[in-house]
Length: 168
Image (cartoon, rainbow, N blue to C red; front, side):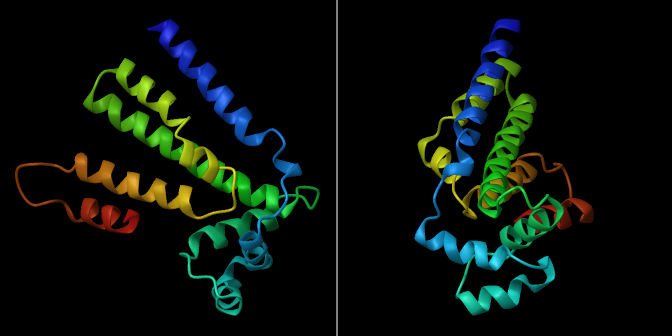
């Protein structure tokens, strides 16, 4: 078990390094220019800026990005902040999958699946970009986990229904 944990942690560190090393040297992709423009300014003004730039993604990514841009020092470039948001959402998704699988399967299986998820090609790419995809993946995964762990044997408690609806 300790060896598997060590390998999983090593894979996690490698996955983190691959995503973060050189992140500040990435050039903006054409669609990322609008993302940066929408994320600049107050998180409360995101909806208006989304309309102005024709962005159709859900606003949470932009609002969180705007919040981080305002909280982090100006020395952190905005494109790095927004890419870190994507990488953070992907790592949170992996953590959520790992936590859920520990309840449903063995700890070893959960660790292996989590390590493998670090290398899913589409998500490796998406977690290095300024995109809503990793955040959407997080909320879809959270919804599935909530549904898998729904209480059985009677009506669902209102709290469970509300939290599941919010994550959806």
